Image (cartoon, rainbow, N blue to C red; front, side, top):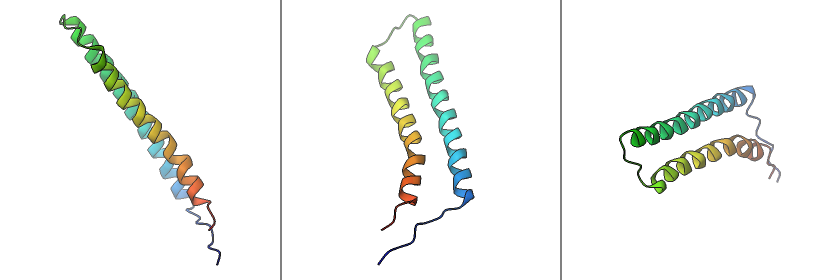
Length: 82
């Protein structure tokens, strides 16, 4: 028994494009937020631990990689024929 490939149509592509732009904007906002927090701590004379800033940047970067891999993963699963 062979199942037909799922055709999501052009609406799914549009939705993935909008979600990709939102993920990009969220990633830029996250990097800017970490940078602003770093500069505020430096201005107040509290350099902080480097691990704190690195942890924030790591979380933002992992979220960006997950968001960037969602579109190709959905397309690959959508063209999968069982």
